[in-house]
Image 1 (cartoon, one colour):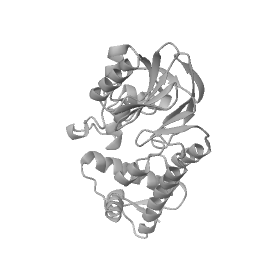
Image 2 (cartoon, one colour):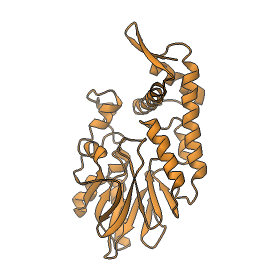
Image 3 (spheres, rainbow, N blue to C red):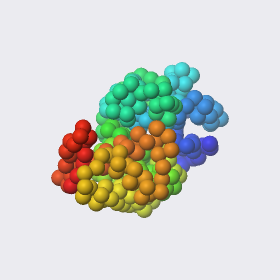
Length: 295
């Protein structure tokens, strides 16, 4: 993990989940997300100490564990305050909701209470709304980029847009064959919004900072629409969401290698089906106590 300087005031800590750093004139800093756990948070603090910076505020793009896992440790060491959108605040303050939602609302069993799905709770000091907000005397632009999660945001400052998981890089798209999104129409709208934004740097949470993301955006869009079309083509006969997931994994030559990945993939498939349903391309029926989808 290394701290990369993008502008005089903006840095990125390259990590499995990238962390943004925005420097204020007084030597304090606002960070964008905090990584998956305490070890990443410790590395961030060491890097910023070398730069003479102290964290005063944390902005979370969304409440997934790999973005908020370092919150608790950083707050305990620095007293930093946390900012997030209203929709994500509930999950930040009650992180058990995330794995619970993934498995259908039940209490998650031990295997589903892992650090990739369950972070420590965070207390949000202020709920962010869209538009300009001043944090630590830094004027930031909060941009709604929902779709990957319900209240996902991006943060723009000094020509650098931290995009969170609103899109993923080509390498990440190849690694995770079925992109995780929960709201497909909003996700597609967020891709269009990103395509229209002019800035110097785009920083995804997974991948390298880039000055031109048009190809990545098109790859994200094309991948999702192709997978939606595959599901629709397969629904000439009634099938369950899990049966469709098996077909999709087989078609993509990928595997839900553990329960966490299975439920992430299943959620993505259900988001596809919801999209097809809302656009009047599929319907549901109950047969033998099974919920089936069909054209």
